[in-house]
Image (cartoon, rainbow, N blue to C red; front, top):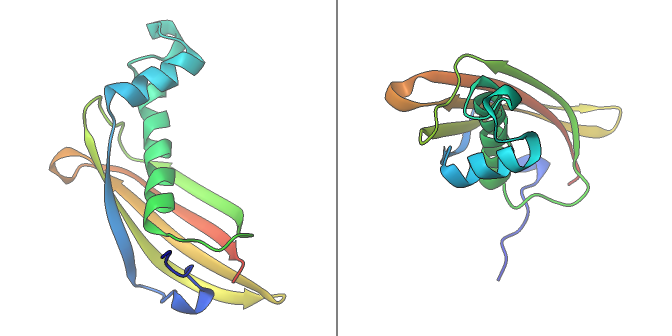
Length: 135
């Protein structure tokens, strides 16, 4: 039996939705390098790869915490701020909260914050996702 999708009414501004740990592991690095290259000059094993892993972690955190989602949502806007680069093998703790929700022009907007921290609670990123919620 599948769970009912999260509805607009379920979002509570200020409330924790959930958290998850994503690991910047060798398999993720291999997939990134298969697209962008395995050489240091291509960004492999460096800041470009690590920054990409932060964005991937943020999106995976959102997608796995805020679930099940109703079909038809629109990812309307995103702000992403880097504070540190995750290192290979590092666990990234991702925390998702509802920042706000509002009805505008008969559309249901939801604003979520997604924060990521690494080893010893080192700040890695914070993001704000603005979504038009379908249900």
